[in-house]
Image (cartoon, rainbow, N blue to C red; front, side, top):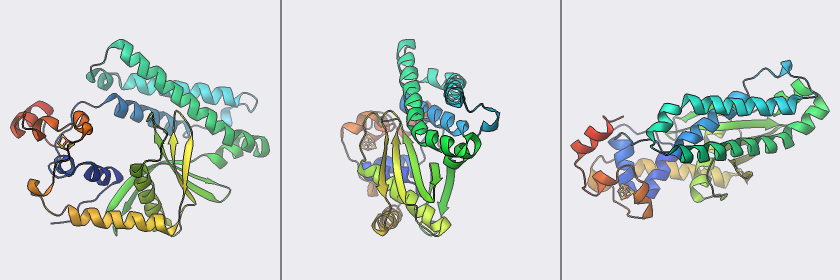
Length: 278
Ligand code: SF4
C-alpha cells in the first residue's frame, strides 16, 4: 500500500499506544467531543496568529503597547465567543468555562509580556513599523516532506537578525521539554531544512503560561527526526489490528477510543454514537 503521510502527532501517538494509532490514523475513527484543552489551544493559537495580520502603521508609537495588548485581548475574546457552540458541547459548567477563559486570557497576556521584551527594544531602535515587521513571525506555516513522508504546521517562524527559530505554542501546565516535544521540534527542523536548504538555528516550545524553551539545531537532531520518520513508515505498513498492540496506562482514561478498545462498545455502536469515520 501507499505510504501514509505522518506528522509529529501521529508518530507520538504510535509511541504512546499502537492501538490508538490504529484507531485514529488507519481506521480514522471520529474522535469524541473536543476537550477544553484542545479547544482553548485552538482559540489562543488563532488569536496570536491574527495579531500579526494587523496594519501597525495606524498605531501611535507612544501608545502602541497598550493598543496591541488591547487588540490581542479583543481577538482572544472574539475567538472564544465564536467557538461558543463547540465549547458548550464539552459539557462544562459555566463556572468551569469561566475558569478556563480566565486562565487562557492569562496565557495570552503572559505571551504578550514576553513578546514585548523582544519587540520593545526593536521599536526603540528602529521605529514602530520597522521594529514590528522585524520581529513579526510567519505564522501557521505548512510544510510537507515528500522524501520523509511527514508534514507539519509550524506555529511561528521568527527570523531576527539573521537567526531563524521555529516555535510551537503550548498551553500545557507543565513547563518541560518532553521527549514528545523534542521529536516534534526535530521534525520541524527537518522540514525547514528540506525546504530552505539550511537549518534553523533554534527550535523551541513557547509555554504560554511560562516562557520559551529552546533547543539548538544540529545534525544529530535532524538525523533523529529522519530515523523516527523511517521507523514509523516501517512499523505502520500493516492494516491488521493485531499488529498494533494495546498499551494500557493511566492515559487510557483520556483516550477517545477506550470504549471500543476495551470491548464496552462494538465498532458499530461506537460509530453510531460518535459519527462516521473522518
Ligand atoms: S484505551 Fe488505552 S490501550 Fe486502548 S487505544 Fe486507548 S490508549 Fe491504547
